[in-house]
Amino acid sequence: MKVSISSKIVEGPWGGGNLFIKNLSQYLKLNGVDVVHDLFSKDIDVILLIDPRKDSFATVYGHKEIINYQKYINNDVLVVQRFNECDQRKNTRGLNEFLKTANECSDVNIFVSNWLLEVFKKEGLQNKQNKVIMTGAQQNIFNSDGYKKWDKESKIKAVTHHWGDNVNKGFEIYSLLDKLLDTKYSDLLEFTYVGNIPKEFKFKNTNYIPPTHGKELAQILKNNHFYITASKNEPSGNHHIEAAQCGLPILYLDSGGIPEFCDGFGISFNEENFQEKLDEMINKYYFFETKMVDYPFNSDLMCKEYLDEFYRILKIKKKLINNRVHNRKTEFVQNKYLFLIKLNSLKLVNKNIYFSKIYMLMKRLILKIKSTMLGL
Image 1: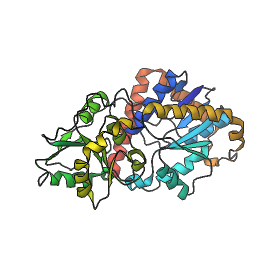
Image 2 (image 1 turned 180 degrees about the vertical axis):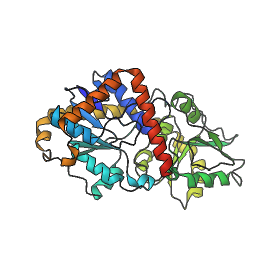
Image 3 (image 1 turned 60 degrees about the vertical axis):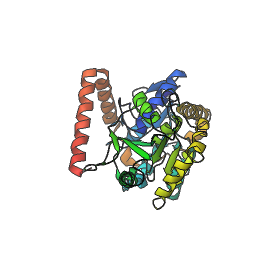
C-alpha cells in the first residue's frame, strides 16, 4: 500500500498536528506501508488530506491538487479527509466553509472527536462515511516512568503547555491562576506554563518555559503532579493526552472535544467554578492519580485505527468510487498541461536539497509577511 499525506513533518516543537503526522508516518512505515508527502507517483492507493489551507507552512498540497491528480493521473486513488480544526476554536470565520468545500475531493472523513463531527453535521457537511478516531501520544516518550506523586509536604505542582498562543488556549484561566498564586495558594500551589504566549502577555507568579518537545517536555510534565487545560472549543488537542500518559490527573475546561479524552481521569470545570474545582482536584489528587494507569489513549492505538481504516476502504474501493460526485466544480479543475508542468516543477525542486530548502524558506518568509500584514 502507498499512502500520501498532504502535510510534511516539521522538526522541533510545532503543535499537535505535526506530532500526528510524525507518529502516523513512522507507524505506517513500520507496518510495511510506503509513505510519501507528494503526488508525484502514479500508484498512490490512499491520500490523507490533513490541512487543505495553503497558508499552513506544513501543507504540501490541497484539495484542488488532489482533484486534478484524480482527473489526470490516478482516478482510482481513495481520499480520506481528517478534520482537526474549526472556526469555533479560534473565533475565526470561513474555515468551516472552506473545509466543507475541500471535502468535495474526499471519499471518507475522519474526525478527531465526536464533538467536532457534530459541529460539521450541524453545518451541513455532505453525507459521506464518517468515522471518529481519537488522538494519542507516543508511549515511548510520554509515559509515567519517573513520575513522582505529591508528598503533601512540599507544594503541589500544576502544569500546562501549548504550542499555539491564541487566547482561546485558556489564558483567561491561566491569568486568573497566576493572580491566585498571590493569595491563599502562595504556600500550597506552584504553576508552570510551557509554550508560546500571546503578545504582551506576562506571568507574575507562574514558572514560564519556552516551547519544547519530546523527552524534554515529557520530563517537565513528570516533574509536576497534575495538569490544567483551559482550552476552549479544542477539537482534540495533544497537550492533555501527553500529560495523562505521563500519569498526571487532568483539571479540564468542559469545552470542545477535550472532555471525551479526560472523562474519568480528572475533574471538569467551567469559567465560574474554576477555584472550587481547583480545590477539589487538590483534595482528590490521590484518588485520580491511581486511575491514570488505565488511561486508554496512545498513538499506537490511534495509528492502528488509521491503518485498519485504510485497509477497510481499499476493500470497498469500487463502492466508494461509484458514490463520488462526478461533476467536480469547474474552478477546481486546472488545465491538464499546466497542472503537469506545476507538478513536475515541484518534483524537480524536491529532488534537489538546495532548491528544496530555498523553496521552504521562501514559503515561510511569505507566510510571515502575510501574518504580519494581517496582524496575526
